[in-house]
Image: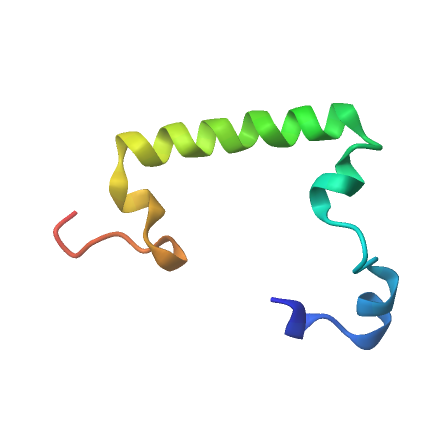
Length: 61
């Protein structure tokens, strides 16, 4: 996905710090992201077709 960014956008993103390291500065944002991730993981566990690459459903459903 990084190839979609322009050079200006790439230069504004710090490549030295990981997302997890950067989120340490924003604990409320980190909590919201973790909540959304939990919802997504739960949905994928209940409905395996959701986790297919590209969000595509199987032909049978």
